[in-house]
Image: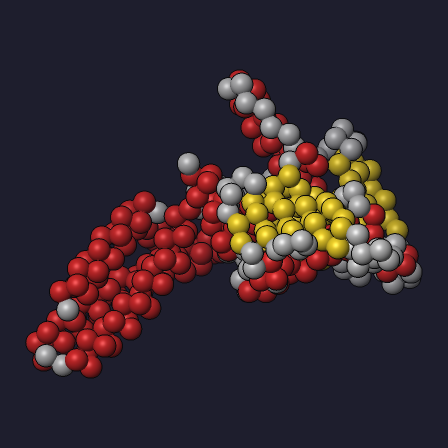
Length: 364
């Protein structure tokens, strides 16, 4: 019993430390202030801003409730242990152990949030996959990665919207872009940005030779509604075309698909997810603004690194993770050295270990 009491005391100390680190009291104050604004008679005069504030209050209250529930759970457990000591009843002690294990898991999930420190970690995310060198094997590899991220999103109960999909010539995909919506979507998925390498015996090789394939994953945060990027009309070219499916067949008789070209940077964004031209243009603009903002952030980051004498390859040269299927099975992250032999679990969306290792690596 004394050992359990000590564990509960340590849990409460850890709880208070992380609660302070995440400034939960500050979030409570912010929620109260925004609720005062919402009670103002002219609050809905600016409907767009009102929606942003209302959404922020929902996020704050949800976060606060998690910590309140955790604190109540610790207090209830302390009371249960005190009752077990008073009654001398082993059944109370057994129940206390079960409750402690449940609380510890609950706290570990909350503690993980402390690793999210980037301004855009809570944001939705635009994730794109591009098949690299390796022909049909690379296109198949890109589709395997697409499935992996769809499974991950499903496990996290995130919402996924396919913005653009470019099917491969024989199998797989040439590229895909998707919008993933959910709490800390960018915080989790930013670990996936970079080159992914696959080594396996090719199912497309009649001689069953071992092949190496590459795919590039790009991850950028969607801009919050409180931020915007101004794009001049003269800097933008807009094309409309028919949406197409596998094999190039038209799936829509109207020119609803949209291609945006930002002339100064030559960034191209396409969207054919909706049947409405207006909706596709709106989504494409959102993605373009996110890309331009991310480009500016990267530029600033590179300038800072140059000042510090640091250099780092970007894009295709930035290999982050290897997936080896034959002659042995291993998935290894080259930044964090985190690895596992359970490649099937990883390809089915079990990425939490790699993501947590990456977030801890960033903190070093």
